[in-house]
Amino acid sequence: MLAALADKEFDVVSDTKYADRLASCRRCPSLQYGSTCMHCGCIVEIRAKLGDKGCPHPAGSRWTGADAAAGAEIAIASKQTI
Image 1 (cartoon, rainbow, N blue to C red):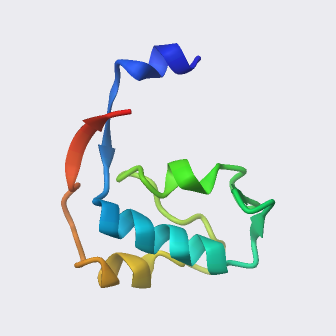
Image 2: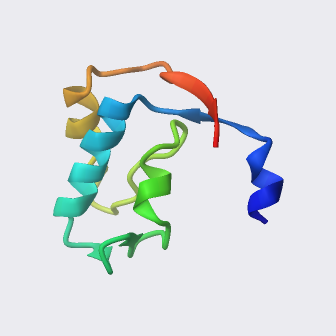
Image 3: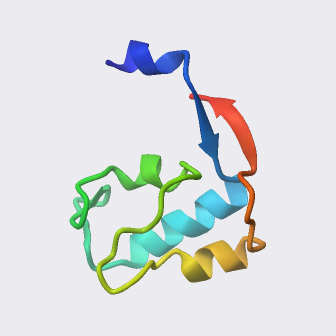
């Protein structure tokens, strides 16, 4: 499965925005096992890097402040192959 993804390009956020998003996830009481969001089941280290993803918290995005703190980027920071 990972081999199929290796050649694809994904829209990703800047390293600063990624770090801020991860910090928000780390403070969230809905983080399980230090890596998994209990609202969507994703691995937060992956979801936080993807530009087209948002925080799935039912009370509202916990990334809103993180995204604003990282420069309120509207456009995707770059295209990278992961």
